[in-house]
Image 1 (tube, rainbow over the protein chains, first blue to last red):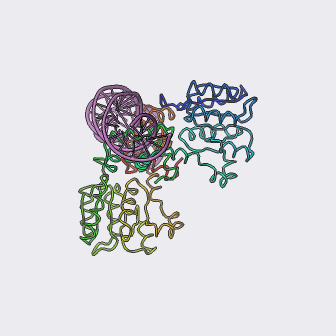
Image 2 (tube, rainbow over the protein chains, first blue to last red; image 1 turned 135 degrees about the vertical axis):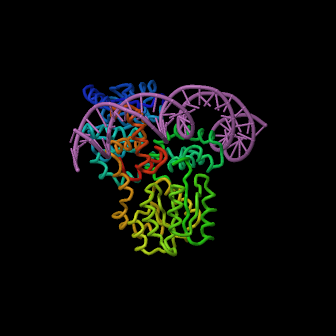
Image 3 (cartoon, protein in one colour; image 1 turned 90 degrees about the vertical axis):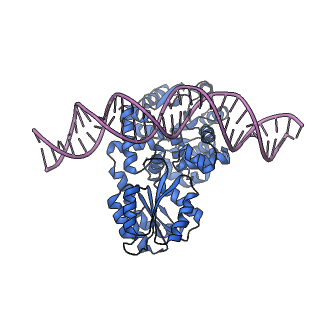
Length: 215
Length: 215
DNA sequence: TCTGGAATACCACTTTATGGGTAGAACGGA
DNA sequence: TCCGTTCTACCCATAAAGTGGTATTCCAGA
């Protein structure tokens, strides 16, 4: 949450693949790689140290595998979004990852440009899936992606009202008038809901809310 | 475009109805009624004088009717959004209004609270329709609502790229880095696209873009 | 009754964003 | 070649947003 860059942690047991991902990330100035890990234990430790905004996590790893790492990350840091980056297009794997709180599931055989685009999208809070998976899981996901709505549920009712104002493009001042409170109070609510949603600005909150169908 | 309030012009030949709408608008501090007109000619004149952001326009009026007034408003002021406010739920009327560039079509028998909500939504650039009409016209509208995409077409390609960045929740600085230009340049593009889209802030632009499916 | 979350408000401060203007370089069409 | 558009960059000013505190009130649960 320090600067405005999206801080990324790469977790994969193939050094060469990590290097490729790292180079891909360097193509986008809004993304910054803050670490690499070859196994789950290291990943969790680095996540605690560097507090990344986004973790790119391989599913197949020696020792603690991707899913276990995902769960461990979820326990230690509820801030970071986690995207599974793997070769398996098995529906079971995808569903398991999403059920355990993954914010995305990308296949390693994607075009690098597409992958970068998805990573960007994920940084803004969108649930990202490889095209190949999207259609496959469209219906199943609809029943299973209550991760974001869980984030929404974390908000207090007042924060949801403020978020609604943001999603309508209102300024803090106008939200304050509508809710009949001071602008400073609205700022507090904005601050808190941004933290709870793991977002960096009201613009991201607006995008997120609209994508959630909040209106 | 002066202050941040949405400036509204009410056009209806029934004084009592105008008063009702005015009182409704007063319930929302982000809306400000800047004038009332009982006929089309007066409406156009007042629109030129007060440059409203939103015009609530009755379809049935003596003399210049609602559609003619709509077209006249479109000629004189491409900034204001125009919402038809009428008793007719005829599909022909709705389609004609939308074809002529109306940004919304609300029926006078709506619940006042709903109407206010729709008016707010319209202020952020959304195409609003009474619930009763939405389903009726869902398919037809899809083919006929290229008013917003016309606004999108007014943007230069660079402005669209910047808008894309906004729709991903990026700051000007990050958009600048991604496009490899200075932050000041991005600010110029933001300023211009806000003007072209008739919006007041990047947050509104983000909401608009996401609703347009821009990604 | 104590405790913690929620909502409210205020302060000070830094960073972003917005609005106005000017202006040069590049490009394409008349 | 001249003209209009676009993209670029810079200046200044103000407004809005975001961050970090502290503190009071209220209310529900332990």
